[in-house]
Length: 107
Image 1 (tube, rainbow, N blue to C red):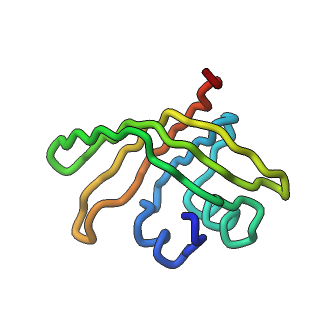
Image 2: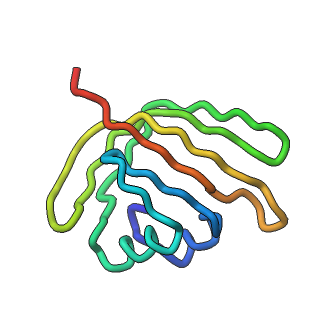
């Protein structure tokens, strides 16, 4: 995501993806890829702090925390998040089908 490689991301994001940002805005897969391709949303850096993966057959739930630096509509933002990601495994491999993140308050 930091490289805005929408070609690769298109293969990793499920066609029915729901991507919910820290401000509550929600995107479909197509909308999210358009934001990245246009530069309206740019992930400058993502620094994972914690991650737990739980696999349930052909599904997986990932929870964790990350420090983020993003640019949205030309405005720079730096913050930490807690996230929940849901993946599904099919014949093509694992794909992200749901993302929900919450901005953490500074300590």
